[in-house]
Image (cartoon, rainbow, N blue to C red; front, top):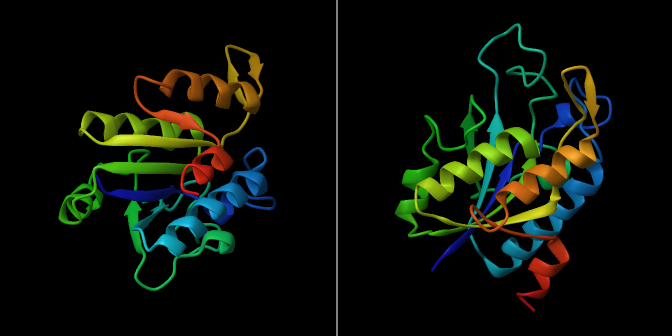
Length: 183
């Protein structure tokens, strides 16, 4: 079994001052960086997923903007692949699956933003495609939502999605537990 790290949408617009701020992005990005550092140290494949909105009227991730750039904390190094996507699913209309197949990768470690949207969609797609997934819960984050005039705090949104993905779709764990398994 060969493993790769998938960093989803860790982009400037989600951070403080961005066009679509999420909850505790700095903490999630720092945990993602810890996983990234481990993969780089071990020489394992890393894929950066970057969402670019095709609609110029979109509220965030506008092509050519500062907000669409991958955050400096996890910037790709030469040789690390950047996969551009235009939907919540990192596999839909991208070359991610063929690249994983080319490298004989069948296990993914996934982290990034947003738990209830791009993380959830990508994890479920990866499982449907027959891949094994470890999901780093503390290296993901989301935002407050509103459902039928009821505010749903980001912490609860995140917890609900991690609970829904656990076991059936992914092995959900925190970053220190994941890193410790490689010690």
